[in-house]
Image (cartoon, rainbow, N blue to C red; front, side, top):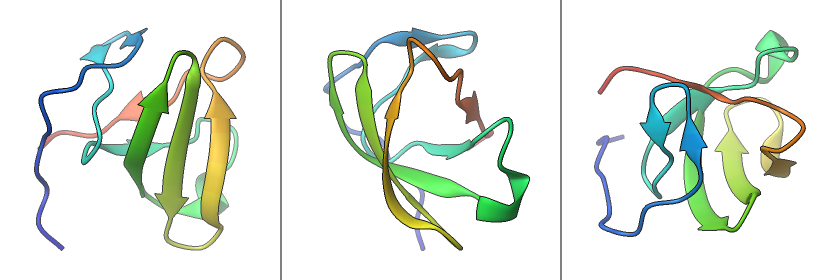
Length: 69
């Protein structure tokens, strides 16, 4: 899978705004594996994780951890 970025920026994270195509981890669910951001609408981020599938995360409550490109 290729890691790419889109121009639509979402809410900020400690490492900057999340964008579709970014790779992240859920801080309290390491068993989900890495995930790729699919969409960002306000504080709602849809992520497809390796072992959990598609999950909607409210980043007002969960600080997703961005992974390096």
